[in-house]
Image 1 (cartoon, rainbow, N blue to C red):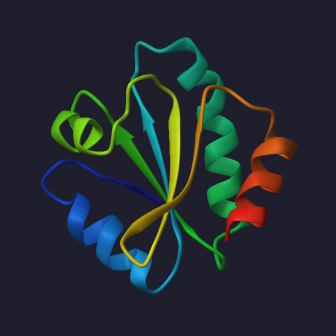
Image 2: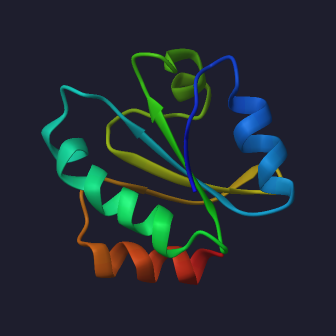
Image 3: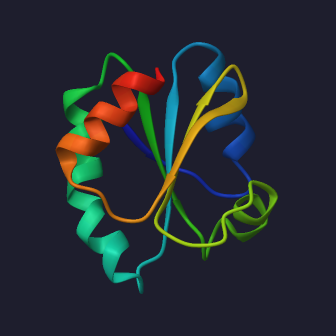
Length: 107
């Protein structure tokens, strides 16, 4: 499942949901070429790993406060939340196989 998060719904959609199932948050922006390269991979992972985790897309233009709060200095920035806390993080573009391996190792 892929959801869109904002500063207003981040707590409910990410922190609360992560108490039941891990949540992968993709901090990105429309103007970011590596983000746009990663986006279709994130969408595939959201479908393929539907039972294992929730995928949340956080456009930093609409989620500026939250991105700042979680130390997002560069995008794309991926963070996995479990029980309301970050358990793993990665920055930059990575191929799908490396991303899937990272997710599986993390959760």
